[in-house]
Amino acid sequence: MSLRSTYNALQELVKKYKVLGSVSALVEWDELVMMASKGASARAIQMSTLASLKHDLETDPKIGQYLSDLYDENTQTVKEEKEQPFNEFEISNIKLISKEYNRNTKIPSELVARSSALASKGYHTWVQARKDSDYQKFLPIMEEWIDIKKQMATLINPKGDIYDTLLDEFEPGLDSSKLTKIFEEVKRELIPFIQQVREKVTKDPQNYGENELLSKITGNNNSSTSTSAGEDDLGTFPIEVQKKVNRQIAEAIGYDFEAGRLDVSMHPFSTGISIGDVRITTRYNKEEFLNGLTGTIHETGHAMYEQGLNQEYEYQPVQYALGMASHEGQSLFWERHVALSLAFWKKWYSVVEEHFPELKKRNLSVEKDVYKSVNVVQLNNLIRVEADELTYPMHVIVRFEIEKALFDGTINVKDVPKVWNEKMKEYLGVEIPNDAKGCLQDVHWSSGAFGYFPTYLLGAMTACQIAHSLPNFENLLNNNDYLSIKQWLNENIHKKGSMTLTTDNLLKQATGEELNPKIFISYLKKKYTEVYDL
Image (cartoon, rainbow, N blue to C red):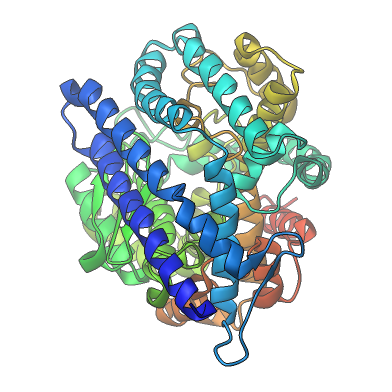
């Protein structure tokens, strides 16, 4: 059999478990969006069975046989024939299949099934624990996940650092020492800068206070400029109207509703079932529209990445999105560098006013009022998904440091709320009143997604570097030319999938250099120095 024929046979085997993975994604979406509450126990069995079947396909010995003919593990090179050479996508695909196979064959099916069952149980336990604001109810899930993840990491890389092995699952090539260096630089620069903003707000709350700015665009006008209680009250933003606005804007910036849908869930997320079926969810608050809108645009960024992947390599590792930093980079690019821009609000604020006519009573200036309000630094906010872009990095760093400490044994699982609260006080100057607004606010740990959180901040940096480097970005934004922006991203990010193997390689090709945190720090300082007249 020629190497080309061997590769074709390998692709067919891989396609089987990737297709099954897309079925699992559909079932998971249904659990979070549509499933009846009494279906939880049966769904856990279904997910466990799917995971076991998928694992059997992933560990088929034939995959190992084909890989031995195609790939030299010692030199980490792909074997080739001069007559039928592999292209760059195929070479990367073989390397990625080898990496997946090595991971999968080292994890016994029993542990895979246990992990899948715990993910389902963990989610429903987290929902109840969060509702009751009681970490103790979630503690057994955390303890079991730590045990499972330690076992898995040790099996995959016996000599490696456990947390580094977990990080690599979400961001290939990443390690905690590099992350720590990057995050320490961010802390060193931004913690005192955030304090500068806090001091400015304290000195001049009338012009820069959080409530003063937010009250201009929310349903409760608590501004001291109001003449009397109830007068000039904006009222509410009906959920059904918000849905209409969100859909209109998501479609305008490039989301294909013929290849997706928008629903509501407790925690906004996106699910790529196939290139032709990428679904997003958001959540709404009838007293304000901004979080629902930015949440929708955030998930739209994720979804457009998935919709723009290379069709030619569907159901192959190389076709999938690179790492979560790249993925988050796309969502935050659209959320922050497009949707929080002055140009965006010059275009869309009049549309928002049309749907919520009470806003016209404010006679707001887009430049002086709306732009500053949507970019307000919410110094007392406790929730990561509702954080502004200046304080957001600290939310991620808190989670990263806790995760790292959990796996190196520096802290005990039962101490997570205490450590969480201490770090939030130190980094952001806020007091955490309860577990629901503290360590139970995110869904990630319920599914064992340790190592995921750092990619959010890396994604913010990636988004910033792309916006900094994208040709004529400001002009395109000022002209509302979302199509040209999307086309550039399609060609330089989306279609490349995982071909470059690491985010640093992808950024070097797209922007001319590897991830540079200084671009991110400089962007934040410049923007918020202007917003707050520092």
